Amino acid sequence: GLDLTLPIEEKVMEGKKVFNVGFGALFICLADGITNKVAEGIGAWKQELNPATCRVIFKDSGFTDVEKANAVQTLKRFGINEVKSI
Image 1 (cartoon, rainbow, N blue to C red):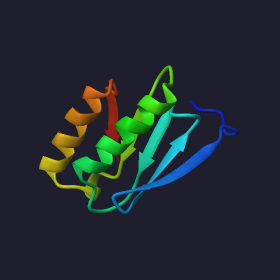
Image 2: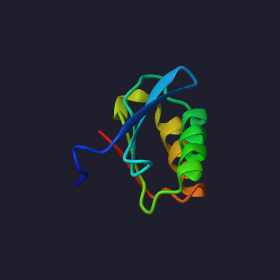
Image 3: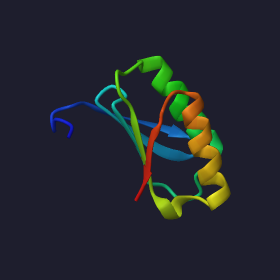
Image 4: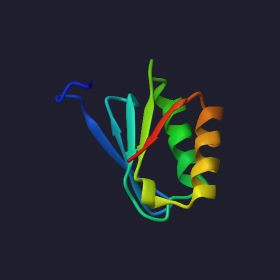
């Protein structure tokens, strides 16, 4: 649902590449070994950009069930409720 011409930025958080599409409308991290620190970084980046809507996509096999649950809760603290893992 995003325009293909939206800008894409890349940051490395805790050694993992995180992509920001459309000034914070969508964050994507498809790395392995994702930790809660990556979720904290995404949340801080989202606050910096202050988008109207924000979604996050992770690779499901990129983290353990515990880290996934912690990451989702951390993102909720930053007002990000739409978190998906593929």
